[in-house]
Amino acid sequence: MVKIACYLLIFTLSFAQNSNMLDCSSTAVHTESIDNQLRIDKARISSIDYSSDAKMLAAAGSTIVKIWDSAKLLYELEQDGNVKEIAFAHSGKFLTVAVNDPRRRTASTVSFWSLSTGQKLSEYTEKENPISTIALSSDENLLSVGLFNGKVKLFDIKDINNIKSINQQFADFGSAISAISFSKDSSLLAIGVGSGQANGGKVSVIKIADKQELYSSSKMKNILNLKFSPDNSLLVFAGIVVQPEATFALSIIGTEDWKEQEFIKDYPCGKGLAFSNNSSLLISGAQFADSGATLAIKDLKSKTVKLLQESFILTSMALSPDGKKVALGSDNGKIKIRNL
Image 1 (tube, rainbow, N blue to C red):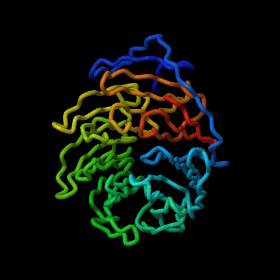
Image 2 (tube, helix red, strand yellow):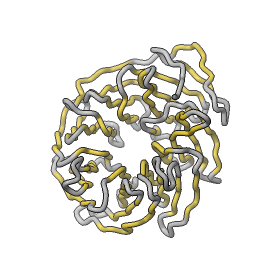
Image 3 (cartoon, rainbow, N blue to C red):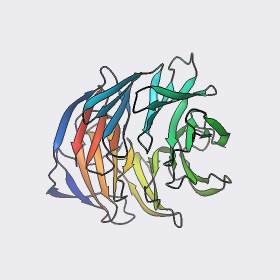
Image 4 (cartoon, rainbow, N blue to C red):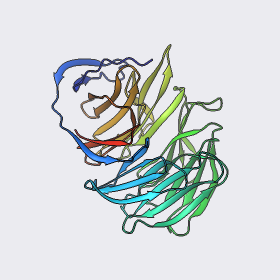
C-alpha cells in the first residue's frame, strides 16, 4: 500500500533528481478552493477535459456528457452506453466521445460532437473489442483508439465526416491499452499497457510513419497514464511498481536522447497526468484508502512539488491549459474546480 504523509493543507516538497523519497517541509502554501454547481447526477465522473482556451469544460458520467462554458451548461449529450473517455479537439470545434456498452450487446463507438450546435457530426463503430482509451493528434488529423484486447488502431479524421482507417492493427500488445499520447508534431505515438500476462506494464514510443520503436520500458507492472509535454521535450508515464510492496511511481523521460531524467516512487499519480501549456507544470493525482485523494503539482524547472489533499473519492482530473486551476471528478457525480 502506498503511504504518503499528507495533511489538510498544501506542503512544499523538494525532490532531489532521481530521488525515490519525498522530503516534506512544513511551509503552508495558500490556495483558494471554489466549489461550483457542476455535476452529473447519480454518476461516477469517468472523464473530464478542458478546451484549449480553458473556456469550456466537459465531463462524462455513466451515459451522460455535459459541456459547460464559464459554469453555464451548454449541452447535455445522452449516449447509448457508458462513456469511457472524452477529449476536446485543439481547435475547439468538436468533442470526441468514446462509449462502451456494459452489456456488450452493441458495438463500442467513437463519436464527434459539434461545439457550435451540440449535434453529432459523425461516428466510428468498433466491433472487435471494447475501447479502453483514445487520443487525438493536436493537428486533428489523426485519431488513435486503444482496445482492451491490446490492439491500437489509427484513423485519418482530417474530414470528420469521412473517417478513414489507416491501420486496423497499428500495434498489438496482447493486454489492455491503458493510455495513448501523440507527440506535438503528430509524428510519434506513445502507448501504455496496463496489467496483464502479455507486455503488462510496457511503455512503447512508435514512429507513426514507419512503425519504428524509438523507446521502450518495462520497469513498471502496470501503466496507468502517460503524456508527451506540449513542447515535446518530455514523455512522462505513471504506473505501479512492486519493490517489494506495490506503490505508485512516476518516470520522466527526455525525448532528445530517450534517457530517464527522474524516477520517483511513492508519487501520487494514479488518477491522471496533465501538463500546463508552457510545459512548466505537471499535475497528477492518486486515491489512497487511508487518506483520501492527493494531488501533486510539480514545477518541472525547480523540481519542487506541492501536495494537496481532498476528502472525496477522486475518479478523474483535468488541468486548465494555463495551469491556474484543476477540475476534479468524484464518484458521486460532483465536479470541483480548484484554483492553484
